[in-house]
Length: 446
Image 1: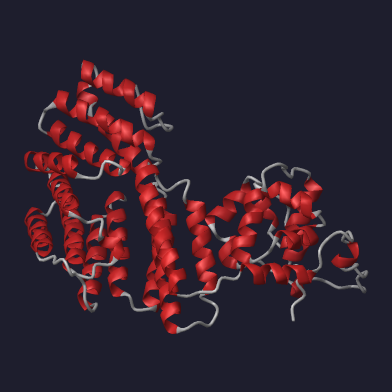
Image 2: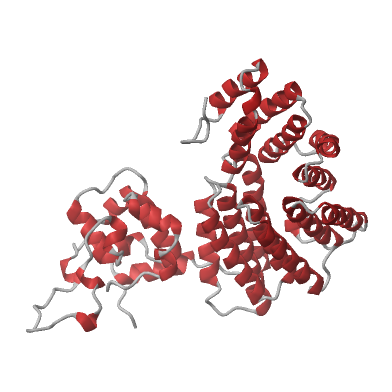
């Protein structure tokens, strides 16, 4: 049985996690300790014992009331928890050298065991086992539903406020669920956990995509694909591939976008019971890919397919929860955006304007994003005053949601105003833009 006090290697998944890397880089030990508990099962009492700290001190760090800055303490944390030195800005630690490369010329001095050095006030290893047992969840159908409800709440809050602040909680829950998958459970519960983990990974990828951190997004989308593949959920695999297709359009890789959405449609067609709503959403993503490539006829064909599939939606269709957002206003606004991407501004404008009147007003990011597209189609038609007015209206919801994707679009609109930069309406938009969305370096020039 492994000694709970003996330093052991941390899971590679944790050491390579972007959040753990960032927390170590800035020496935010409150985050580091929380991540160790949630994702590696290393509780505060174990942290205290391994790092020769008092439990109260560890608790104060986690609560944000104390900051660890002394180099000897940071070195003890690195050695006790097996965090590589370079992650904490330290020199390579002695234990990082593989044992085969260590030259043992004489017998090494005996190092007292950690428990002999620890103050008597520290709890023993049995306390950690009790804590782990106390936090273990008894999983049943109700537990799975609770997980799904939390995911729906994450998506709602993501629409309203953006995913940046939510991401640590989402990733923490993802790692927790992935940990649960290691235990043996009835197939129905195990499959449900795989589906929940896949959705959490996709949501994490989406928050990175919305922040325009594309490499991290792709990594989590790939993890979502792998988790869905474990239970052969081809509809969900299609959904993830569709997300990756949309990201490829933002990365100016339209050929990749088309390949990914084509694969998504193949997965959905091979799945049992793919619903018309799912196929309609995928057809619209195909239209985006063709429009980005400038394929006019194929774009129109895909738009027609999206509407045809949508008309086939029945009241009893068992739609997966992740596609219910694709309602009629969403179909209409995406149709307008596809025409807008193709350069057909006159066709796009009334569609986007109509959808904006009908869509949910609590979806701040959606309203900002769609208002940008409306402004862009108006500008493409030479309607400068109307375009600036629409873009200015988009700034309010954009400032309420942490979405670099939306902010980037509005700064992009500002760049498109270059020929009209001295017009009063353009100057007014610029002033409001600078007030509500401070420029990022190099992105906004007077």
